[in-house]
Amino acid sequence: MNSTSSRWLIGAGAVIAVLVVVSVLVSVLGGSGETTTFSEDTPEGVVQRYLQAVQDHEIQTAFDYLGAELQEACTLQELRDQTRWSADSDNRVILEGTEVVGGQTIVRVRVTQLRVDPPSIPNESSFSPEYILEQQDGNWRFTAPPWPLGWCQGLTLDAEKPPLPRN
Image 1: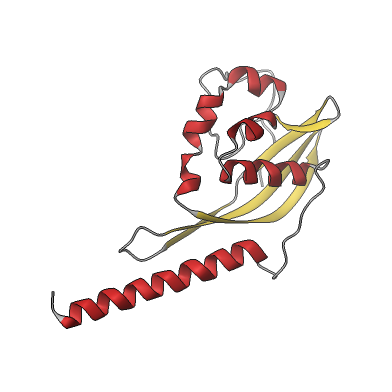
Image 2: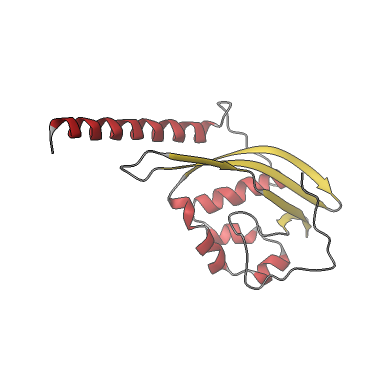
C-alpha cells in the first residue's frame, strides 16, 4: 500500500470517527441540546420507553408494551427477530405530534438512523412511523404493531375495524 492510499484511509477513518461521535452526542442531547423525558403514563412516554427497550435489546420489556391482542398474535421471538437492526445503527427520535382519533391515540415521531459500515461513508436516513395506542387496564398499550415490529404471523386484519385516517 502506498503512502497516498494510507493517508486517504486514515483521513476517511478520522472523518467516520468524528461523525459517529457527533451523531452520538446529538442522539444523547437531542436536536435542541436537551433530551425530553415523557411521563410513563402518557402515550408519548410509552413510545419513548418502547423504543429505548428495543435499542437496549430488552425485548421482554418492549413486548410488555404491546396490547393484549398483539401479545396474543405476536411472539417474543418475532419482536426479537425484527429488532436486530438496533445493534447496527445509532438512532435519533424526535416527537412530531400526537393526535386522538376515536378512542385511540396516534403518536408520530421522526426516526433518523445513522449506519456506519467501515470503511464506507456513514449512511443516514429518516422516516416517520406512527404508533397507535389505547388505554388497557389503566396503561397505554400499542394496538397496532409498533415499528420496528412490522407484522406478526398470528395477526389477522379485522374487516370490521375501519383504518385510521392518515395525513
